[in-house]
Amino acid sequence: MKIKKLFLLVFLLLTFQVLSIEQPSTKKGYWKAQLALGDDINLPFHLFYDYQNKELVVINDEERITLEPLEKRGDSVVYGFISFNSLLIFKHSGKKTISGYFHNKDRKTNGKIPFSAHFSGKKLKYKKTKTALDVSGRWKTSFSAFSKDEYPAIGVFEQNDRGRVSGTFLTETGDYRYLAGEMNGSKLTLSCFDGSHAFLFTADLRNNNLAGTFYSGSHWKTNWIAQRNDEFELSNPYELTYLNAGAEIKFVKPDTSGNQYTYPNNELKGKVVIIQLIGTWCPNCLDETNYFKELYTNYHEEGLEIIAVGYEAHDSFHDQAARIRNYSEKKKIPYPILVGGKASKTLAAQDFNMLNNITSFPTSIFINRQGEVVLIHTGFNGPGTGQVYKDYVTNTNKLIERLLNE
Image (cartoon, rainbow, N blue to C red; front, side, top):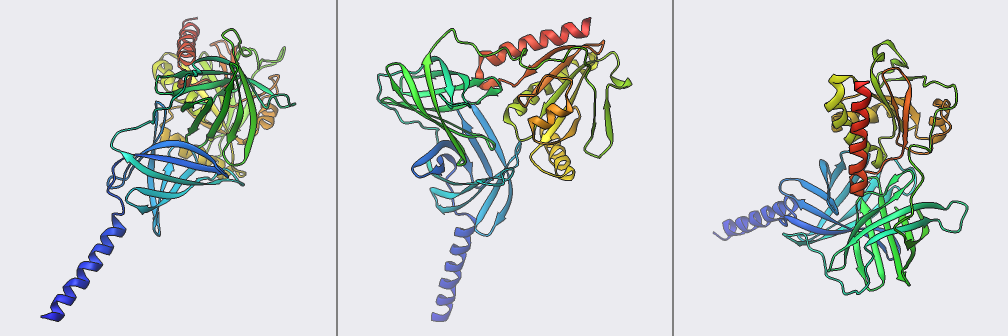
């Protein structure tokens, strides 16, 4: 009898151990997470995590990014960002704690950043901060201020009565997407983590001026300053890139199967065409592509065609083509993406030397039914910019409708 009891006890202990390994966390809900960018430099964000159903969602203000479960590696689980070549790899340190790292596979150096999170509850919670200072409004901003690399931006922020801040920065190459953070005393913190960007902005508010540091991952940082200014405007995105006098848009690029595609061609005669220069690693390009998908669906039967050319982080054609195929399939892109080559604005400018320059991915060229360039748009300000994005969508829809009816 004693042997049977001992056997039963051992069996129960082993069963408990197996269950504890297979189901290390029963905490379904919201998690406070952070990326460790450096000594005492942490990028905060939120997760929704359901271990049982293998659901993991990154939260940036109003944005929700669902990751896909890929595999188990020993005691760790691997989740992939659907839109980018990036992973979250972590293990359960307990029922309320997970830790691991973020791996941006497109980066050859500084591609791994330590990651950790702890369970915060069934509802998304933000702490209330005490401050009489408010950063709501529009800010004229300079990044890398007082250096040869200085570039302008516009900060647009909203702050609620709990000290919670949301908004973004608009630049001449695109926006910094959905930023969220807090105002605590005179200290401003804003961050964004989307699988490509790992952005952290810190600043002090003094005498109605902001001054602080911008961290991009663990590999780069610079200073930034800002002053309230409702009148400041960036350069017109339709004037930064233009067609050289007497030039025409012509190029030859392979598709992902290696077949050469030539523009212009007979199939596009009499069509309205958008030529989109992108990279699958580029979040602003993804924002534009999501909009162009809608544009294509709404107007393709009336004569709209979109041809994208992707410039990729990989070195070989094989890897570039594979990345573009994967991107197209997962994002269900209905128009072709050709293989441009290595991710380089210099290379893109050489390929499209009929333009004065390529200063940003994305860059989009709008061509009428007669094959004439009507507009060229540099960069992209996505849905995180609110009314700026809505105005762009309205104006572009009107442009396409006008071109189709000419």
